[in-house]
Length: 195
Image (cartoon, rainbow, N blue to C red; front, side, top):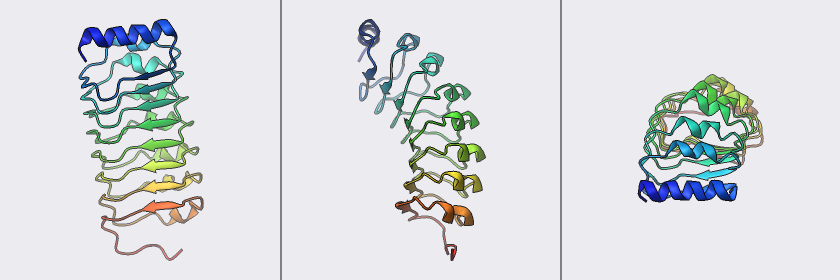
């Protein structure tokens, strides 16, 4: 999709007061600042593109509830991601992220957070603030440890940690009694807590 087509799609969505915009798989390398004009947007799908950065205006679309950025080339998220406090589903799988800004932990409405297949080496301790999370995908990163605060996520049903560098789990992980799917394969674990 060229820039003129992209601008036309965004303008059309704005004129229609659209609540959903799907630009997935369009080969986008650029997202224009006009995306910020879509103030009624609830769902923005940008997966399967080549985006390396997003315009600051994305973080001003505060009615967003679902943001899918899976399979892009993002290397960093700005602190402004913390403005999206209505987002309940956030897909960042398959990018190039090495760290998360602490402000991501302001997204207290999050139910699903997909961070698999990035290059994360640690999680911010405030991850424990995301107490509404039911699904957390962290597979395919380079995590060597989990912060103990992860055990505050007592609503978690799914916790995917496969293909990391974990050598131990915090003992408090046993407090995650709602877990129905815990994936730990291909780590450095030699034992699990007897609790």
